[in-house]
Amino acid sequence: MKIKLEDLRREAYVDAICAKMENDNVVGVFSDKFDALLISYGFIVYPIIGLDSYIFDYYKLENVCDPINSTIAYLKTKKCPLIYSSKFFVLDDYCKKFNEYLEKNTDKKIVYEKDLKNFLENLEDRNFDEKIYFESLGKIEKINQILKDLQESDISGTLLYKLEFYIRFIKNLDDRISFLLEIKSKYKKKNIKRKIIKATCPFAISDIIDKKVYENYKISKSKKPDFTFKNCIYEADKILTYEEI
Image (cartoon, rainbow, N blue to C red; front, top):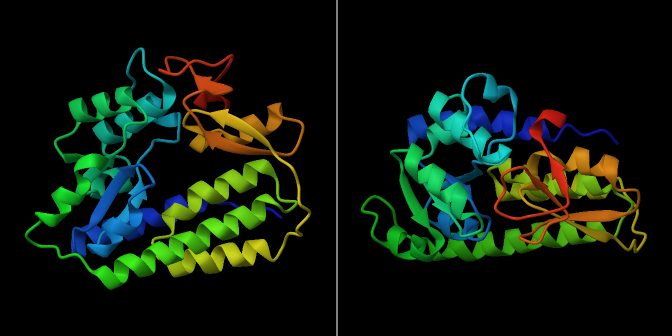
C-alpha cells in the first residue's frame, strides 16, 4: 500500500496560515508531550522540525546537524508556513543545541515544557477547557493504541514511523483516528517481533534507515542512537544526511 504521508505536512501549510490569519492560534513544537494541554487552550499544534535539504541552497549554518540546519534555514528565509504561522514555540530538553540555535534566531516567544502550564495560565486571551483537555487525552490515548496495534501487524517499519510522525499534521484528533483506522484495516495482525532501531531526530530519514535494516523493526527517537547526523550532540556509529533523501 503506497501512502504519501509527507503530503499531510504540505496540506497543513494552508491550515496553519488560515489559522494564523483568523485566530493566531498556531503553536510550533519540538515535543510531543503536551498536545492535549495546548489543544485545551484552543491552540493548533504542529511540529516545527525542518525536514528538507533543498533549503540549504538559500541558507546554511556551519557545524550543526541537518535537522537544526534545515529548521533554522526555514526560520530565517520564512519559507515554512508552519514556523511562520506559530504564535510561540514549545521546546523540550531533548537537544540543548537545537534550543540554543532556535533562541538565537527567532523573535518569537519560546516556552520550555517545564514552564508551559504556568505560561498558559497567564495568557489573557485564552482559557483552559477541562472538558476538551480530558477528551483530547482520551483521543491521543486511542491514537497511541492504534499505532501499537499496527506495530504488531505486517506494516513496514518505515511506514509505521511515518504514521507516528506525519499524523501530527492532521490538526483534528478525530480525523487522525479515522485516518489511522483506515490504515489499520489494510494490515493483518501477526504478533511480529520488531527490533528497536534508535535514531536522533529520525523524522525525515526513515526511508534511509529502511534501506539499511533487513528485518522487522520499529524506529525510536533516542539519546543513545544507532543512527545520527554529523555534528549531532549524540554519538552513533552510523551517520546519515538529508542529502540522501
